[in-house]
Length: 204
Image (cartoon, rainbow, N blue to C red; front, top):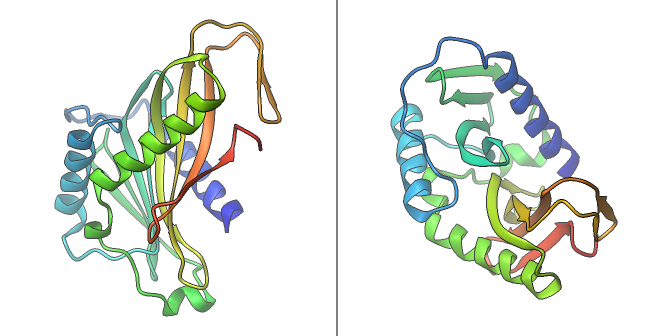
């Protein structure tokens, strides 16, 4: 499941890169780090895809560590992979390969994406990092994904990019950062309990 979700993100970023030089539309920057920004992203997606749009997985992705604004959204429905590109204001669909128990599960709607709840998840994640280290001066949301397991457990996974005070070599979890001020932490939140855990970057 996690591998499939990660592959989905890679494919979305590849698609973003291939059209970077294409004709762009004038859209306001939608900040992925504030409740207001997430509410605007939700509103935009509803306008583009419809209030009754249903999906099994959703990824909302920013393209740059130092400017985490909404660039692309990817969805997996029971029928299609659906991508929405902000810079071109275009929607692309490809037939899905979704099989098995996922076809029987109750899908998400945009009403399940609650910006206020996500901001709580983010703050819990920041607090977890801050308890381990004081090396960072800010944290930016790089991507947000809503997913579910085959047994119907719903969860939100997200990447926080921390900006370090300087580019000195540091070790977090099992990774070493050399000559870079950015470091990515991965988190997962159980949508039923609100429990947040780090899946990569602290002790992982």
